[in-house]
Image (cartoon, rainbow, N blue to C red; front, side, top):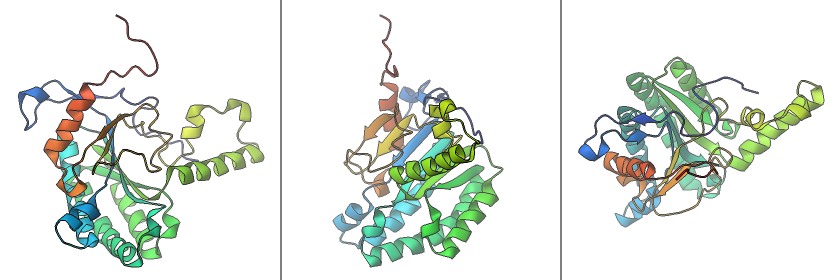
Length: 265
């Protein structure tokens, strides 16, 4: 079990920052920027199809856009970014598409080292990496080791990730600790459970963005999104740029986050 602490814990939103400036202008002054943004990267295939191109071309463009968004996220003062890149269900896609994605992952994990260095960005892969070929697992370990001391942006990439799988794996570890006597069942709290998940030590997302028009979680961070604000947009991921990110933050600022309480009149 990982009990490492990376930033604040507990409910999302406690670490929100104010935006000092942004390209969209005066309306961004003094806005609160979410401490942690999670993004479901959806629509690469649809974007490519609309242009008469193969789905793989959309994934390539989507991957390139992720590099740009990391720069924008840091510029806006966001401290944590988590993206849903490949789910446990995505193995069901065609062999050709999966093989293309594996090739893309190999390339991106290498390029991401430069992005990590440029943005002083710590990178962690969440999910079960054991399903990947050994060379991809090696690249994951190399990237995580390379970036482990950076602290200006914390970037989590969900690869072979599913929330149900994450919770199942975590609860197996918890049950083992109970069986071995290192954990008292009467002392198990929500924080205990969080500590057994892939995201242990990372604050819950304040804002979830899903691109390309779908309005569902698709087995992503179901434990961590309990109090997160959701923003859905029809913009496909390859076309999602800084102005779209700022628009999502503007909508987030219009939400009344009460965490189940009642606002005093």
